[in-house]
Amino acid sequence: MAEKSGVYIDPWGATLIEDYRRVIEEFGLEPFTDEVLNQLPNPNLLMRRKVVFAHRDLKVIIDAIVNKKPFYALTGIMPSAEKIHFGTKMVVENLAYFQKQGAKTYLLVADLEAASTRGVSLKEARKRALNFHIPAYIALGVDPKKTIFYFQSENRKVMNLACELSKRLTMSELQAAYGVMTPGKVVAALLDYSDILHPQLEERIPGIIPVGIDQDPHIRLARDLARRTKVQYGFIPPASIYHKYTPALDGTLKMSKSRPGSFIELPEEPESVEKKLWDAFTGGRETVAKQRELGGKPEICVVFELFKQHLIERDEKLNEIYNKCKNGDLLCGECKTLATELMNKFMEEFQNKLERARDLIPSLQFIK
Ligand code: SF4
Image (cartoon, rainbow, N blue to C red):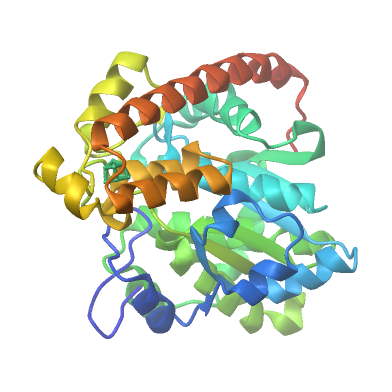
């Protein structure tokens, strides 16, 4: 997305966003305020802690939830890697949240996108999706009995709509949104808009797309296309929520698949988890004495961010760690030990659920 500053938010890259407030302003998002939070029934951890920081038109979805009106939620699996990272975990948790609130839920495998932008064959994408990604999404909370699954390459409606939508955009608009475009990226972007909007071909109901902020260009253009095709299709512009990045373990960039030491994958072996966490950037002081005297800085600490986003469910426990850190009553070694224990426990549970979910795969129906 081109901005006043000339910065592009690139859904295919790893751009650093330092100031989320600036992002809200420049991209025309709505902030995820307490008022919005308080209207959501049983908000999840990411919402309660404002890891979800912005939205578009969430009020439309809140209205549907509160008044028990139909709506849908949708996300896509990108089978370009054999594992997933913690940013994907957040998308799945938010999708599972809306599913629990009654959303008609779609989970698609973006195999055509993986082929056109990452060179992954359709056969390989299918294998990865069935062996790992779909079971992983189920392990992280998606209910397979209440989910509609499909592969982009098998869904005629999605392909046909992508072609129809292609007439409503120009190359300059795509370049303004994404920066340099290749033919593969054009194909992928059109399929994304079509994935997002196609549930409304059946039923004009609002939809919510939980994403990381780097995916906003897809949302913005899908919304534009909904307006441009109003006479033909009457689509309701899709709503969205945005979560912050899980920072890289060195404290600088978001976790990125292109820098293996910068992130923890799902699943990952305990020895590797331990080493990475012990090397992680913290908000600790240079010496124990200074830490005791001045306290640490949890605001910039990657270990604390992992507690906040992923590892500690109880708000009281998280507050206790925050306060003890600020008061100098906690040392970084203690936190890293706790983080390692919690992460390994999480990995063990994830692995068990993954195995159970794999048994369900042969019984899943994929729409075409
Ligand atoms: Fe982070 Fe814990 Fe160190 Fe505080 S004590 S800076 S929360 S690792």
